[in-house]
Length: 251
Image 1 (cartoon, one colour):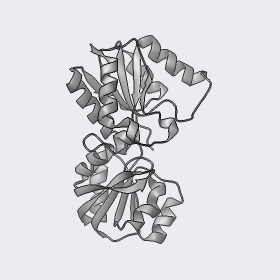
Image 2 (cartoon, rainbow, N blue to C red; image 1 turned 60 degrees about the vertical axis):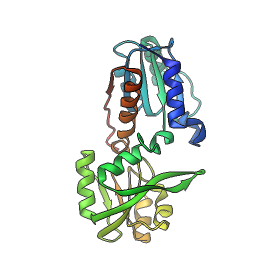
Image 3 (cartoon, rainbow, N blue to C red; image 1 turned 30 degrees about the horizontal axis):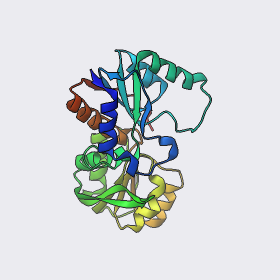
Image 4 (spheres, rainbow, N blue to C red; image 1 turned 120 degrees about the horizontal axis):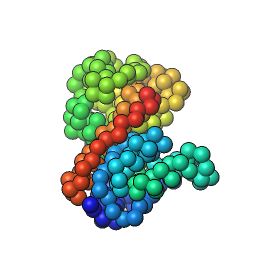
């Protein structure tokens, strides 16, 4: 068993939660406490009802998620939201969420882990947002089709490609999750291709007009890396077992 307060202090410090501006509904940090003791760690992308129900089995624990319970802001404690809270509290399951702090973390972040998996050369932070840098940009040697195939193999699913830029790639920008709306900003930074999870419909025709390749590789699929790396590091630090609760959305 480990002390929840010590685990939260470790996470807040290592993820630099207080220093990174995020969407208010992200509520980065501890979102739901328990009685103060943790016997196991569960990692998941979303704090959805099915995930919480699955994670609740097994005794007091800590659920680490990328997308927390409060994306819709203040809401009545009824329906599925009530069931999520009730299930977690009865099981002694605490919930800790990390959105942008986990995306941009230089060791455990979704961006850096996907960049390494794709073979980006010397990836460096880029694309400013609210005083921080959202993604990574690096050199890449290969064709558009090569990158699409590596993405499919790495993520295990379909990749939707907007083939509007050069066929041979030399620079790739990457922002995991739902960053397709940043296509104009990314194109202005001079990359041949932009890898992200998903984007609004208008991002595709805009990419065509801007002459940039965009790879929509799946919001969920591009954000499974960080929570697993974070859970593994936390488990090692506090000598606890951990597992990943995989609940893909297909989006």
